[in-house]
Length: 244
Image 1 (cartoon, rainbow, N blue to C red):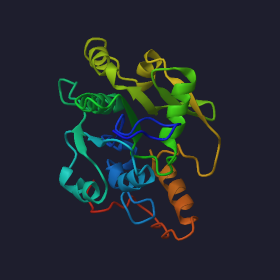
Image 2 (cartoon, helix red, strand yellow):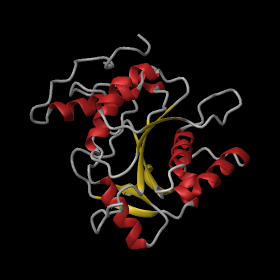
Image 3 (cartoon, one colour):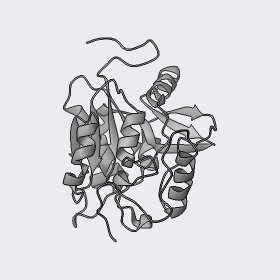
Image 4 (cartoon, rainbow, N blue to C red):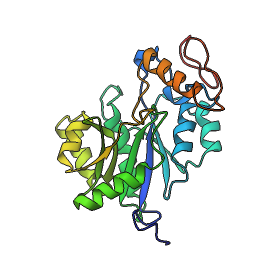
């Protein structure tokens, strides 16, 4: 196994899991992973591209109801080693939230003996920092902590974090027996260091949750040199799909 740079982990020791299992309720039920923010590619592809090349396994976590056929082109165009399904924790197969995606990613990573940490990133962060891993890793090492969580503008970004794979079993127990569902509650138990970000423009933690944030993302993309002008309205998706 080759060693990474002095400020980073060894190659193969940290996996990436892009969380793409959300319902997109405030976007009319649209699949956020397939949204076009104005650069002509699905949002999931944009996020994967910004974090490439990743020095370890790359996963995408989706819900059981996700149309995997629509994701096929994205997975083929980008290096995605594993597509995992959010852990089925609710009796009625209802969505258990992003913690189910984190659990699925941790359990998949735990099957690779070389992987010791997992970085999670939601698929709705179009401006995620390309140096994400380096910043999280330095914060973890500096604090001698088990992992690290991004902090920007005084706010913890609990879904953008470096998690110890060794806690996979503990998370499953907490979700099954204690009903833990909030990512922040679980992060508080993991003693994560804080990786602090400055306040650049565009905001690397601008997340697309509603029409207003989608419009803001399109405006920023269109202002970037060489970007394609964003569609004037609606929720365009690559490959169609979603509710009309």
